[in-house]
Length: 289
Image (tube, rainbow, N blue to C red; front, side, top):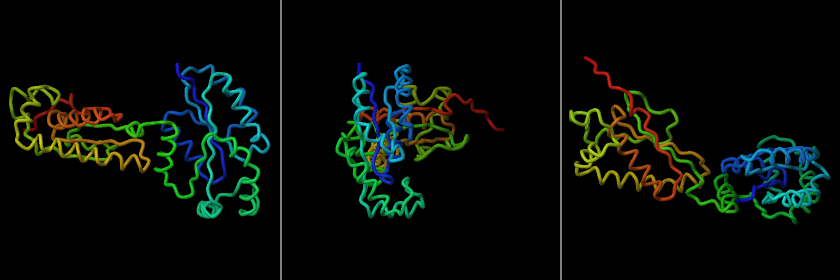
């Protein structure tokens, strides 16, 4: 059984500790920011008592004062309890930190003149930098690049960095509000007008064979799937954690279900974390006279 992961995120104020914790949260970590050092022992007991908490990340900064210098020893003790421990240190250049504090109008935790506070913090926190398992310089990184770097450190495959949901729907019931990308497939052959297929849906073989009879269906499937596969790494690089791809037809029972199913299978075969939902597949169509 894999050991529980216990990571501590620290570093210079303004270097991105909060963003790093959010990213770790996207990777399934239970994250706590600014946990008082005095509560660390009780927190470890709480984690041990909860078998579902297997990945933990704590954010600790300069406000802990001299307790920061005890972090390496504390991690050694946590490691002795069977945890896989890591100390991640985030830093950035002085000029970048000055600009970030100026843009956000946040006060430095040391509450001194900003340039002086940054200089003092660098000196004070240097021992942690030396003891760190991973040092990440965020001076010129975007949020997406920071996520990619943390993903590499965690040995997370790119295809696992984003949760993809493929949703079929009927336009008569409205476009799903959570949609990021929407594809209208009402140009495909409509099985609804074939009496033997009307009560079936896009997951039934007979319906799929009917739609595939059209000479352009296979071409469309390939082009649409290739486009999505081309776009996914771009979204991942930008740091997107979720992507909802909606495919619509008139009623949401035949053509959209068919296409959403084919797309989801193609993405799953390529290793993407992809779910498949058919929102309107069971809605009974009422004729309007």
